[in-house]
Length: 276
Image (cartoon, rainbow, N blue to C red; front, side, top):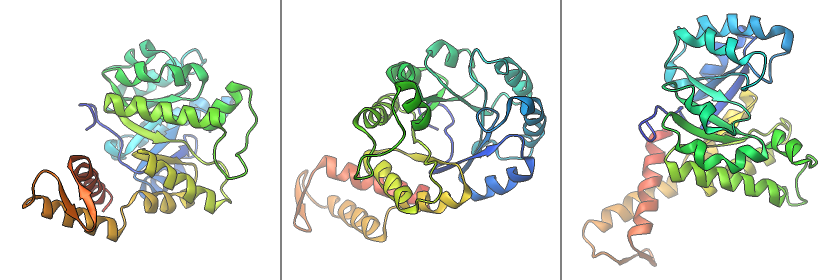
């Protein structure tokens, strides 16, 4: 639970086309949470077929590990998606191109992951995250670059351009400020394993709780990045134990330890338990 609203399992969220029911169980088994996609991964002439595949699958898939990305507000398929999902009111939905808090709240009491992938969505992130039924915020790099009128690509060091990095940071701040799940964007370059590891490590360091994937092969790298190392876990346990017999501020392994340091240690132990 995050902020009283059920949150998706972390850290690896895997998109799966809604019109490929043969992949549903494999995707669910591979990832921590599967995102059955009725939007971008499904052609317009297959939307109805995707809904017909997704709805019965929700009866057997673990609801705590399943999200359905519906089509956006104002599209010809949005209302049909909601009507099809009426029998599964507890299923978390991902709302693409989210930019209006009223659109998120209109889905209540259903939990919603708001996908911020436009300039308007990034600027509206604090209001979206504050909606009572918001379970998480995710940002979408590819659609955002297109909306900004920019060009795909990274800086020579592999980092996002400043305008895109700012969007990533805004989503993280908005999510954490409201106590909802911050989810990092997908990497569409399936061949660049080094960039995936770097992106995942950067997401962990910044404070994201999860990262979305578009192929099962990406899941192990994401899980590895989010799992604390043996050395980090040992340090967290030792410093926490030392705090029980020390004053408010003390020295441990050559480092000053106070309340913020102990908070870092507690978070490492929480992550270790969460990620096994």
